[in-house]
Image (cartoon, rainbow, N blue to C red; front, side, top):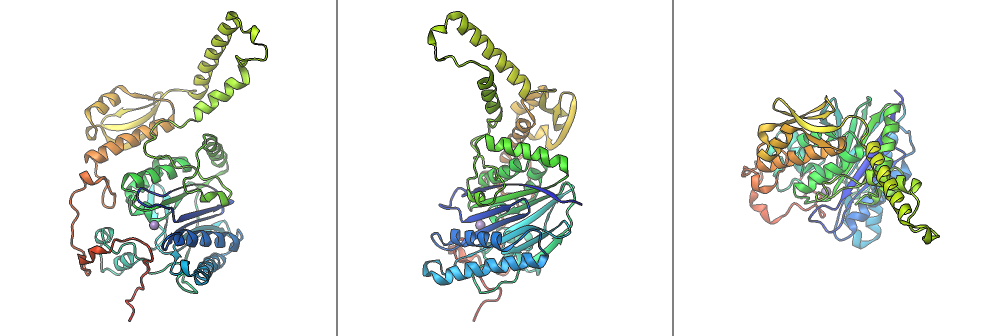
Length: 448
Ligand code: MN
């Protein structure tokens, strides 16, 4: 297939950290990198930035799998050397996960550390990378269960990272992409807060990659936001889809959204912005359209000759603006109306009388007020508004505990059942050690 990709990203400092040590890179929709730096003060930021810059310089699209591996090794060398030169950066390191277009229209997926790349194909989410972390290696060797790993005090400790040695072993796999595939690159600030099931649901429910990216960051913050959160969503498209996505992405940019991480600026492709959870309202895209429409057609009331502004002119202007506003509403809401309602017990999105999407949410999981709204059919301005509404009531149901998103999804503490405490093989008395990632690279085998 001829490979066409479209990506959007979001990065956020989270709710507890003071700075964002994650970094990301998008080059020509052909190379995508997420790096999660660690080290005291600014060292973590330096490490992830250094790795991302080195990847950009080292990989020419489309290379081979070996070229991707070599680029990651060069990035390792760059971080290692920087730490060696400056004592204040000593001990810094960074994870990296990368997706790169290679010869033959295929994708190479590389990683070192615990930043992950996932594939969503046919609504099923698969983790493509294997974490190089203490607990995930213990899970793979059967020493820990997945559930134990999720609450393990050492779950942030890495067994491999860039910049901690003069060379590094890099895992690289090859993926044969299909139209409709969606890839997700992310730092542990996402997957440690938001379980795979919810990640899959958000990726499935948000067609626009920018929406999906910002929603994932929002959910990670909702779940606690204890770490920096960085995501890149990459869609494998056919030609038509691509032009639609470009238009949508441009609209997002026009709305004035910026990446909280700010690191995508070096990449080239636009990074869709993160919307903080407080802003559940519609984005201002339609407002922007209204404004430009009126500027184009409406005479400015304070013209160069103010004496012309008689009551009749004023009345004319008011009527004209009213007509234009009505026209703008019709333009932005063209076609049958969107609504969220019910089909039997299921929550569904409709356009006119057409059932567009059935949501994994049922009426008896919702508060009475919402049931009433849904029974009548809740009118929405557009598809995006409908999705936001469904996200909102899903969040309410999660909070109320009427839906349980399954293992791994962290819901607000008030409704979390008490976690099972025992962890095999390791004493929980190491409680003093918060699983912060500052310098937390451990050797797989305890050193002498
Ligand atoms: Mn992290």
